[in-house]
Image: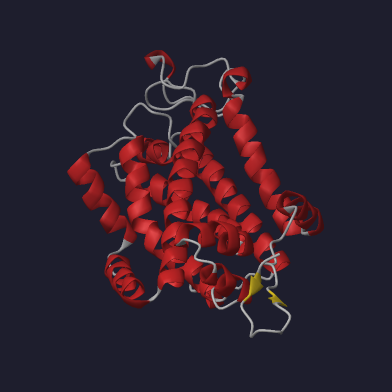
Length: 303
């Protein structure tokens, strides 16, 4: 156990260890079991993930291959959700569309939360000019509407999953930094962080061993909430024609392609909307349930 320097003849005072929360996975599982909203939300997200993975087994149709002679068909025995203007099976495109939505959204959210967590903790730990400069830069980025910033980035760099993931990170990292910084500022004055600094530990070591384990709840809730916004933002981008390239099965792109025929085959537009809505509801329920169960006040933390 570490100790602090004391006057001669006095017994060394023990430094209290960091209250690292052990068994986070087990505690998270207990929280999910005890929180109905979190359990329902995670179950919905899990269903979407399983359906996306098993899409080739759930439909015999290819999502990008159609038959012009079977265009604009209503729901029937052969095509349960009908077909679009190109004769492609709507249900197949919805099922495969979950792969794109989940894949790009998860990648974008992971990158966003990872960068935001590191920057937020670093700003809280170092403080001073670094904190001031970083927060002013992030305030400038936050002043730009999200969809406008996304459109500028994809217009300059082109479309594609990698560009969209990068654009999502640029748009949402400032918000994550503010939330994580608010949580880290409550941990930085603790005795175990002060003791780590007195021992000469580096900033990264303090961040990894002392700060991060004690703000895991905030980071997890932020991940779930941010994921729902990322899903909506990416779908909006595809709807506007700056996201997934045709004929990629993407929910936002499907709504855009089928909106002109909504009076003929409304299911072709409603099916991707329903899939998108249920995924977002599931993520929001999970975030709200975890937030209430863990006592994470997102407003207080700086959201």
